[in-house]
Image 1 (cartoon, rainbow over the protein chains, first blue to last red):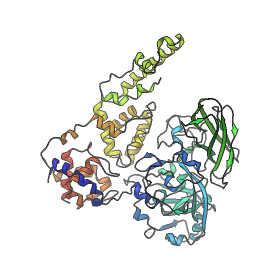
Image 2 (cartoon, rainbow over the protein chains, first blue to last red):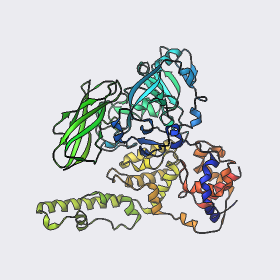
Image 3 (cartoon, rainbow over the protein chains, first blue to last red):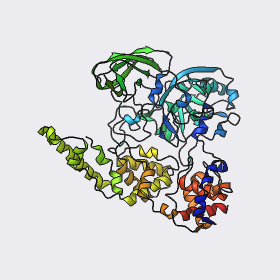
Length: 393
Length: 238
């Protein structure tokens, strides 16, 4: 066939209509937000355009709940096509070491008792950018975390209906998302049976009182309160009870940390690697922001702190680069698994740049370290939070 | 004063004649410092620092890649890596050579369509560009390629009809398009192209292939116009 290049240049404008001609099967960010409004990516800091990975600017954490459209987004392959997870087409299958396999619709599932809880969801790589030497992966800074209200049913109730056989010790999750190339391993994960049977482990269909948005796992995702987000499978379609931990890359190689501290080398870890599970105690300064100018006199410093499935017992603030620390005051709601808001009134006296730091302590007695132990995956960063403001006269 | 400008030139310097190694006077001038205002100790310290900077710059010059290699590597990244993820994921990494080698090996193991030589070329390019000492901000790989290029894009100015050869298009399609658009153009992660109406809308077809659209990367730097016409001819014959 013959193509005149001048001809195609002349008809370039027609390209605007291309979307209608081809019919996009790639879900777009706009489409993913759909009913959430056309906020798009504006409020988020995009780390990777495709698959879409974006973090929440920490100023958002002055509120207790993180809104759905400002909640961090992370997946390995991006969301599945919207039509495959629409409630009439979607089914959840329960199989493996169970007495009776199940295949249920969302409506069937909603016959189980509904449970609502508020929990922090945090990417294991949150803070990866702070590790030295640097490690490969999405360079998350401070905002791959959020606090939301989740409504769903207990995974325990669903497993009890199917009947877990005595050999069943691990519960495997598979979502509907797929890699572009069939040669890339699927994102398949498992959690130990004890966590799966915990009464607070949910199959959630609502986030902050709204149906789960596509980017956050519509129509159903796992919520393992107190554990990091790679256990919280999105777009859930299959639950398989197994005798062993799920094989494959995303369980056996990725999302693992050395059991004991290792030297920061780029080679082998030199320690047994164990799966990332529980959250560590951590705190963030939400306001003021990095680089802000504040007035001499009283300055309100506020933020959040969380420690997974135990309570945060203390948050301390330092306004002299860590030489002295003062306790912050807790404010607002206190709920298991949710983060705690805190406030500290700083009397800023000396004009010029000042570092503000915060650190939290939990009910286990664990306190945030200056920096986290280096690990080859760059997981579980929980070092002191730190920013610099300028005090103006 | 900052040491950073020396290393920020690693790849850019390699694409242009490399006269960019800062000299002491220039570096100090940039910092707005006057020699007579400095103590002898400070001057000695500054001279040492500048000497270190120059050594580091020379070291990086040696590891920097040739412009032609950089062009080829950036082109490969757009064609082979951006199938699954955008180049921003690559650009934000700061890794030593052994980690780049492991990363590229992992991607090849997972199906990235790279020959041994191409994989080695990518490791060479990425180790020189995205090493642990590289500055926080680097131009995007797309921008770098646009600056270094484009021998092929210049062809746009020349006129005259292109005749696509369907027989050639089959292989080009399998190598470049099939991962997303499926075997026999039947669709996959990307839309079905066999008998797709876009084939009759030349403007839309060329615009999409050359510049990308939504999640589809731009192929303008990867495929020649003749190759695109060949693919079009093959698709039209389906």
